[in-house]
Structure formats: structure tokens, C-alpha cells
Amino acid sequence: MRTVTTLLAASALLLGAGAAVADDHDRIEIDGVVLTLRAPAPAYLENMDEVMSGWLFRSEETQALQLDDFDNPAFVFLDQAMDDWSRVEGSEGKSCASCHEDLSGFAGLKTVLPRVVDGGLQTMEDIINAERVNRMGAEPLKYDSAAMNRMVALIGLQSRGMPMNVAVDGDAAPFWEQGRELYYTRVGQLDMACANCHEDNYGNMIRADRLSQGQINGFPVYRLKNAKLNSVHGRFKGCMKNIRATPYKPGSEEFKALELYVASRGNGLSVETPSVRN
Amino acid sequence: MKHTGVMLAVVAFASAATAAEIAPQDVVFEGGAVAGSLTGVPGDPASGRKIFLNRKKGNCLACHANADLADQPFHGEVGPPLDGVADRLSEAEIRGILVNSKMTFEDTIMPAFYRDEGFNRPLEKFKGKTILTAQEVEDVVAYLLTLGE
Image (cartoon, rainbow over all chains, first blue to last red; front, side, top):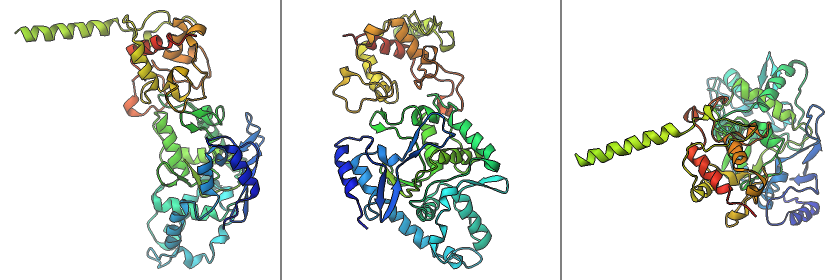
């Protein structure tokens, strides 16, 4: 399991005591899987040349927690999700495992979500709940709940190391445009858009925190700040409240569109689920 | 009876102070600058220094480094350092940037600290409110004017 490369050890030294953007490497290895931390920005990102994993913006101590699954606190929750996976629920007497022989069959699924299905955006949460309701006869899980976030993380983990590759054109185009509009729209009493921090100021310190590009390829993310798995929509909500804006609801059409757009800004980066951040 | 008289005098004084205050929508800009005091009451630099630091008030240090607060950890890097700002900007320019920085820098990330309308989806509890009061703006102006070389 412990597969920290010498390359990484060397760069960790260079990072020194404080947080710093690690300019000197573009890959890490976790459990034998190589993760790409930098990629050329997709052509539709007009104001950036390179997309960068949030891992690069964190302190050496925080970075280290993600490099070994034994150290990564998210895996406590993934163990719980494994129990959920084989627990029978609902009127049909089934668990997830009744139909899905092997979790590894989900390799690649996270890389293409959200995607358009039947004219609407479908997220991992939507897929999980549709399966629960339609096949198991079970209650849907609350969007952005502990049980939902850990199952999203467990299925996301099956894609770890694979490049994010959400569709932005075709029938996804109008949703992507909506998400792009939200990304650049100033909101709240502080009157800021996502882009003000995560496009114009990534790498800069905002008090004790170093601003990242706001990539979501590592979500759900274990945050040291609240010691739990955090969903994409939960993080969007937190950001909006920070700038004193009324958040959209987790699972809303707005947040799904924003999720698609932000995911597309990370196309080319590896799935890092479950990542560790501060 | 005497007590009531004192109370009335205090209330009268408070209303007079409010009347002299310029409402956010009545602030007059010349370019990005605001020449006159928002309150007519001189700013208190010591109070301004506290507001500069306070995360629920100015929270200026979140984005601007400031050598006068070298004892505080984690100075921001989003805006320019404010060392010597009093030598670079006039009082009116500083006040204008605090009231609404977008009148000086069109696309800035910096919030407007004395504006109470025109926001998109503000949280209910901040609706119709400014980030700082008029006097708090004057206090921060007074503090920043102490940051000369």
C-alpha cells in the first residue's frame, strides 16, 4: 500500500514548512495507481493554460494524508459504504451487491458524470437513488447526506487514476452553458463569482488558506476542517454562504449544471476520489 | 424627572447623528473618489485597526498584507500590500475604494463595504445591509491614513 515514490519524497522536501504550490511535479502514486496532477487546460477554458489538482495547493502534511489509503481518513467512511453496499434494504429484498457482482464494474463511471440522460443532467447521486427506488424498492437517500456521500465516494474510487472526461457539447451544451454562466456570475453581499477566487487568484493566500482552482476531480473530499466526506454540492453551498449569498439547494438543477461546468474545467485530471483537503 | 430629561437629550443627539450620515445610495463619487466624510465625525484609527482585522467586519487582512500587523499570522495575497498606502492614495481615493471599489477598479474582487442594494441572491440576514457602517468606514479610512512611510 505504501507506494510514495522517491520523486514525491523529494518534492515534499522542496515544499518546506508552509503551504506552497508544488511547481516541480505533475504526478503522484497511490496504491500503485498514478494520478495526473496537471493537465493542459481544455480549449474552452479561455483564461487558463493548465489545470491543477487541489492537492498541489495544500500543505505537505495534508498532502501526505492522501498518499496512503491507510492514512487517508476518508477510508473509514468507505468501509461504512462497503457495509451499506451489501445490506439488504427495500421491498425487493435486495442489496446493491445482489445485482452488482463487483464494484470494479464502475470503473470509468465518475469520469463522465454529470451527463445528460432523458433530457436532464444525471449525477452519481441520481444514479444511486434511481437504483435504490426502482430496483430495491428502498427509500432514496437524502442528497448531500453522510450515507449518500460515502456511497458516491465508494463508486468514485473505482475510477481513481482515470482522466475526467465529461461531455460539454451535444445535448450537454445547454447545461454546460448554464453552469458557465453561474461560474462567472457575482453573488452575495461580497459580490463575488467562482472565477474571482478560483480562476483569477488560485495560488494566492486568502488569510490562512491558499486558493486552489476549485477542481472537483477528488470529490467527495475528506476535509480536515469538518472531519467528514464533503460532496460537490455541499461545497458549492459552503462557498456561497461564505460570500453571503443564498445558496442553491444540493441536488438542484443549478448546482448540477455548475457541477458539470466545474467538472469540465478539470477534464484531463485524474479522478482522485477520495481526496484529502483542509 | 431629571433622569427622563437626560434620556431625551441622548435620543435627540442620536437622531441628529443619524441625520448627518450619508446613506449608501447618496454617496457622491468623483471618479472613484469620495471627498467628504460619510458622517462628519472624525474617524478613529484605533477602531479602524480593529475593523481591519475583524473577520466579520473589514477582514482586510484576508486579502491585503500589512506590516503594521506583523504580529498577526497569515496575511493575504489577493490584493496589494497596504504598507505606505497613505503616500500613494488620497483620503478621498481611499474612502471611495472602501465604499465601492468597483468605481475605481471595474472588475475587482474587492467587496463594496458601504453599499446596501443591487446584490444578486444576498443571504436573507444581509439583505439591505452594508458590510460596514458609515462610521466604521471613516474609522478604517483614518487607520489607513496612518500607514505612511
